[in-house]
Image (tube, rainbow, N blue to C red; front, side):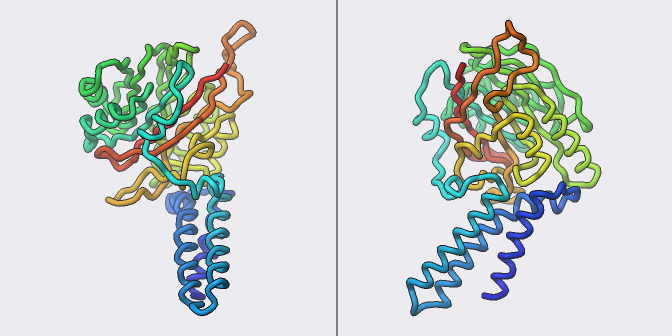
Length: 337
């Protein structure tokens, strides 16, 4: 029990310490995301261990176990900016989340998925789109042919825009409405940031489809940091995709501080984990739907411009992997004046 307590305390210190440290080593970057989950798991194990070691004094054991779990959830919440109520809330399917939100011209259903170049399945992704019926789908690592294969397997309503790249650098956006003002921002490794305007019936929405470098080496960490700095400088309504980062990282929080809100933090459930290299549960939270925070005006809007829309996340859910190593993320957003 003593050793378990020490490990739990170490994980807690690691979670909070790495949150404030601008980590530059690949292992520490991964640990910054994994440590809060470790705290919750170890806290649950410690709570059970407390119950087993105090079999006679049941009320005391329950109280001690509950305190351990509460402390673990609090530490994890502080490390990830996710409230304890969100961490403990029950997750529902993407179909249920979408079905429970009122339809209307001001509703936007956003789908984001890193479909895993070469191993992804257009058929399985198309099945997800058919069941969820999103308005916009951001597909990282999706070549133009993959995106068109997905569209051919659905009802063909999509306006398709891709960056024309191959392999893991490819990016595609499928939109229910026409798109305009399309351009790609160059980054240090050509990892795609595809920027476009979606001609939503209520008002145009600017979208940046994101896939940052995976920080798996010292050189790639430097590129990852530069790319996150670049995202913080963008002036768009929606930042969506695979960030290879979470709120456990200072660099990701700098993007949020530039005027964005994370839909998972606002309306999601649990830890938001979306990626794993192995079969089984997801281990890291890499995929996000960020919306412009209230009061953050577009720089391009003058006195005669339309002004920035008020985007309010209503619900968020994770869906299946559909042949990928990432889970899809589905967010429902209300578009206000």
